Image 1 (cartoon, one colour):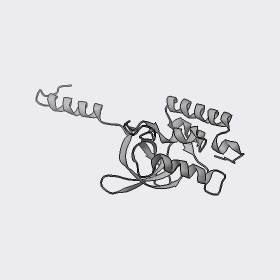
Image 2 (tube, one colour; image 1 turned 90 degrees about the vertical axis):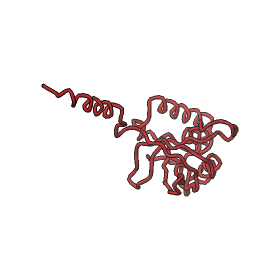
Image 3 (cartoon, rainbow, N blue to C red; image 1 turned 30 degrees about the vertical axis):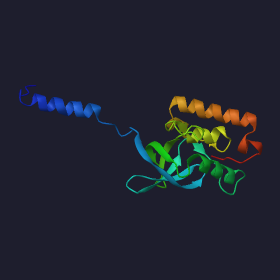
Image 4 (cartoon, rainbow, N blue to C red; image 1 turned 180 degrees about the vertical axis):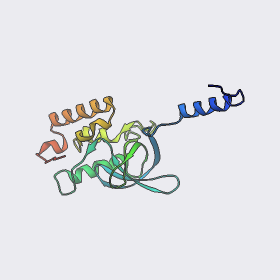
Length: 170
């Protein structure tokens, strides 16, 4: 193949751009403030452009309002994120158009810390949500291990929803 010397730099730049461009599976970051807490696994985040985004917390499933611990799960989520700045790491929307992502917030006991608390993991640890095993393949191996371990620990301690038999068919 005979490529003109004048085209070579141009082609090299194109190849570099393609090599460093994010792929379709690359995560997107949403920074904003939680303005609504629907339940134990769904919140609404207001971004800096004043646009609202419904966010389904990835990796967890919380009891519905009419199930045992539904209200407790919602209350715990509210304690973690209500009116707080969060960072949502996502690469997916669900069939309802909600962002499905990992939500990070400053830990309640460390106001000077960064957003280092994984809200989904915190809900599982407190026994306020189940690890959503159906979507485990969408989590990193590290997160799968953490979420599974947290659920086993909550279950062993009979924390939250593990105090009673709550049906979880998902």
